[in-house]
Image (cartoon, rainbow, N blue to C red; front, side, top):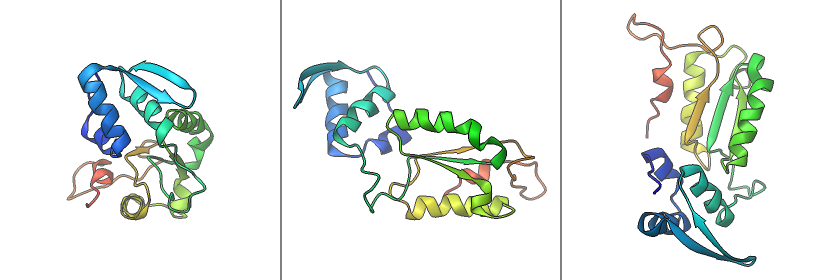
Length: 161
């Protein structure tokens, strides 16, 4: 049986995904009919669900309505080349993935610039990011300091809905 958390359930918002989830919850093994013949699938993980879902919903990246990403990776220039294999892995699992250098956000990015970028992505991109990965420690990625407290990246996750 596949158990989904709230972010994974948000990802499965189409009718096709909903039907697949119902089948999985009821029988865990179901026939999938396609132009290439009949196939039986037994899904055990969320990743398997997404790969089957993508048979029906592969996004057309050339579509002007698709200007966003499922998986947003924000990285300093120093780590850009090293993060590409992870991005490709996420793409292979069916997640639209975008890697953004921090210097593409601002010449000298601040915590506020990065927070605003994430908020803008959530508000205006289609699809809005489901996952955001921040790469680097405080010497590479600016941290928030609130009310004299310790440095934190917690506030990057406070997206206003």
